[in-house]
Amino acid sequence: MKFKVKDVDLSTGGTLIVILNSEDAKKLDLHGGDRVILKKGKKEIITSVDITHSNKNIKNGQVGLFEEVLDTLKVKKGEIISVNPTHTPASIEIIKNKLDGKILSEKEINILVKDMVENDLTEMELAYFVSACYNEKLNHEEIVAFTKAVLKNGKQINFGRGIMADKHCLGGVPNNRTTMLITPIIASAGLKIAKSSSRSITSAAGTADTMEALAKIAFPLKKIKEIVKRANGCIIWGGAMELAGADNKLIKVRHPLRLDPEGLMLASILAKKASVGSTHVLIDIPIGKTAKIHSKKVAKNLKKKFIELGKTLGMKVQVMITDGSQPIGNGIGPNLEARDILYILKRDERAPKDLEKKSIMMANKLFRLTKTKASAKEILNSKVAYLKMREIIKLQGGKVSINPDNLELGKYTFDVKSTKSGKVSEMNNIKLTKVARIAGSPEDKKAGIYLYKHVKDKVKRGEKLYTIYSSSRDKLEYAKLASKNAIVIK
Image (cartoon, rainbow, N blue to C red; front, side, top):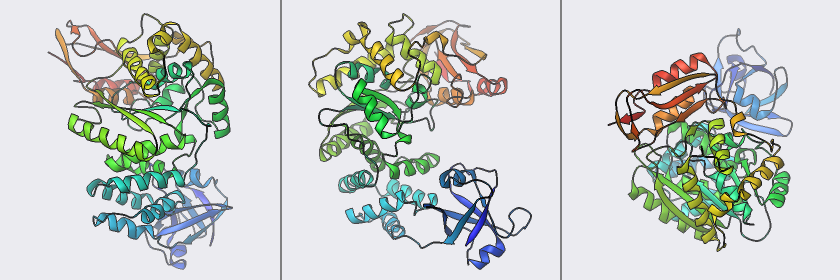
């Protein structure tokens, strides 16, 4: 049945929903929450339907589209699309089986992932699957099957034969922007490293957000291959590459639920590594009270599973467990973090030593893993890594002459000062991230916070702990309210 598109000018935050008039819904025998298939040319998606009984909002012959549906279907107000009821996919029964605690076969997992990629499942149905994996953990065989199914049903990029180095951090620690240092160091030594990174979902900045302060991050696969061929490395946004479509859909529903099932996380990370042909991968698991992983026991269990899954996929995986009790580096927010990176690469005295030290350690681990004779510190000190980063920035459409001090910061600022003398005993990663996000980061690249102190540093009463930057006076006021007790002095 054909309908005229109406833009309802509302966003659901991710869920795909359309609105039909009750008369039209009756003709199609649809009820609230039923599934419909929307078609425009060759493009089609499945959504849930809401029904209005008022002709005032959605008239007969109209279909109301939320922003997410407009963007996904690539349609505009006034265009004609078809809306029809759709079948219930076979994967619904498979999700029920997992909810009942059953072990899924390779065939079932393949059907499930195929339906995800082809948009045959609504976000609510995906949420049930995520919940099922949280309660009834995936075993090793299921994780392997899921990883392979994500690879099979997504795009892959082939950089040719030879070593492809890679690294990944489980997250939860502000800044910790090691990727932007390790990539030019590794590439300078002649190894390939095609680093696809994520944008922020709950952090103050993802690696992609920070790199975007210096260069473009979204490219077609052909262009990425060209960049890596010329510079040995790149730092790009993985979301633009559609390499692991099923995983990207699950990430959308995992984060609002605050659920990160172990099996899905393992498959998510290594499927993305395999999709770019990574052969040697270093995984960083920071642990801390306010990091993503809280205990060493959980970290050690993950370490074992990462290595096992890597072997099955033909990768050499090494895992390091690091301190995630506080932010790494000084800046939190895209421009502030990019400034830290450039300070280190340019060997500026203002460079944060903790971020530099961790990046050198990780790069050297990758050198040992790939049996490459090179020294990360020597590459940094000789400024070869800085020149390599300039090359990558240029190839990714950025300004090679970028000066760290020219990166703009929010014009509204507030200094958070210590109310007592003593030592910094604790830094709350979650609270500090929240302050930076309320100030406007990562959407506002100029927003964030700059730290002057870290754990064990001495501090005097009235001394600055950190400065909040924002481009909005109102946002700064809200950020000030959230800044209480983010750093504990004893």
